[in-house]
Length: 308
Image (tube, rainbow, N blue to C red; front, side, top):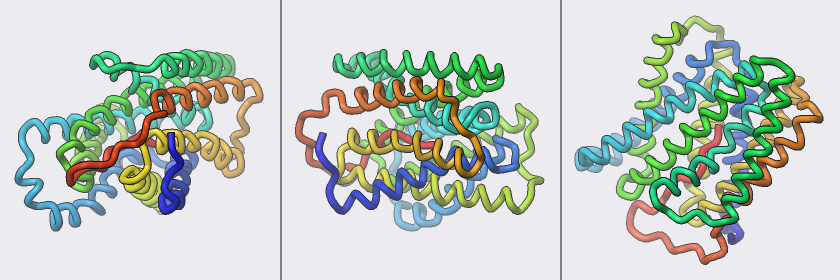
């Protein structure tokens, strides 16, 4: 694992600050969970689409059936991810939900193994440590309330969906550039969440101006600034480093929730959260001792882990 390029350090700082605000803002927004999830994707699509259509019109026309299928499937999983991650923040604390959602690398490693890829022993040790931490943290939440435990399960489900989303997205990004892919993905995610809102009978409109301001802040910070900065850094900084940096979302979100929302984590929850982070660092840095390969081809940016 190598230090990031000096020019990428401010980019990574902005990225982690952007995604770190996600949980607290969602928890503080007085609007239906699926409405929050829908509008962050719909507004993100509206921001990206004009540029994507103007600069990448030829690329959109040249996309094959397999590329469209993978991109749409990735967006569908992203929509389901937000449909579980956002409601989890109404049931449990920001710290717990963020910690469980951050377990995405565990499932990414398991998916890689199922696809026949080698997973280093260090990663398996990290998975064991993180699973023990998740078990301890979920036990603490279950003792607090059934709602908190259900929130943990939703956040864990969101982590699984995020891992599938990133696996599909990585495949798409081998041949499709960032802006067209992100536009398709966000639009599909918004459509998926809209369908979920109908199924769950949640309204997408009808909340106050304060909620709209928070949704705009969420879109600008976590959806556009956070994810865009990480993808930009991946041009010259390894995905391993970016993945480790994204883990800082957990303490940042917990700190903001403590100060802004008064959500002080239980002292008994800290060991579980620490074990999760230690395990995830081990997973993210497994097999990272080799030199970073130079990018090749026109579409060399590859998405790393996703934040909130």
